[in-house]
Image (tube, rainbow, N blue to C red; front, top):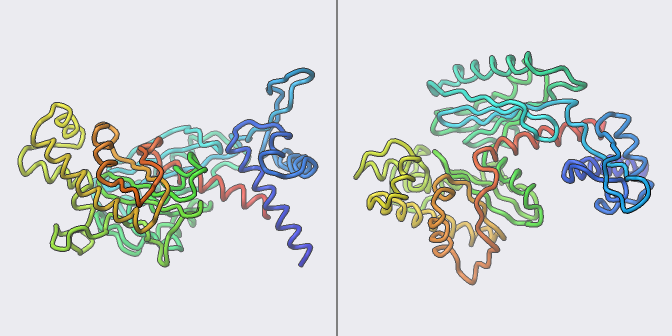
Length: 379
């Protein structure tokens, strides 16, 4: 038992060091020892192993206060690549990154219909095309990760995407059988939360809310992602804020998504004024069109109800919002803050996402990279 515990601890230390190099980008052995709280001898031994595995590289580019320059450690970022896929309601966005999350290429496919087989076949062909054009490397494709706007269970089964009409879809097995690499399926809100938390690791309790054609979220508690018993604790778009309200695609009435999603905003303003997309709506707000301003207030009022409920349930430190409307109309963020702030809640702040629409894709890449290193360093 003692031998196993020692081996497990050694694996954990390896993972800790590789994650630290990923986070710091460039770091010396001495600074790595300080950052990880591991002694210098342990760091030296593990770094040698990582160099032998070609997972990291070293160079003499560090600053020196006298004497020779320190040797700097970096990730050997081009020994493999990952594919991240965001299955939206109307589009599929794909990025290919190296192991440092540097985007190597990106693709988009318009969903012509909601049929799973059609979408899957298009996706299938594109992944093969990507493999054919990527340069050969030590590990080549190390994983594929999918972000979906729906309910994903703890085993990666897509239980339900209301807007696409998908139920109990096992895309994971199909991809694993064809490409023979690890496949990860996760809700887009959870992936966004993971990506945002990497940018703000000092916050232990965080709520990340994505507002697009649908509304989803990710919940971080004690620096861990919260999924709930069946994996859909983050489905805040289907929190009911009006029990006699609008019919939702999930079967209920009065869901938050029916009042605050981009599609809901367009539906609301089109009752008074024809507006083709959310960009046109934002421009009308900037022009102070009365119908657009009224719709903006409608959006803020209902979003404030949903967020206030969540603040009291989760007692989060910080809220990160990913919304085109809020990003383009700064006064909307101020109004929202005024409506949801209460001294009793004491949440730290309300932020706009720094990652924007790429947040789920970045989170998807992170999963692939982290699991790749864990598989090598614990085997």
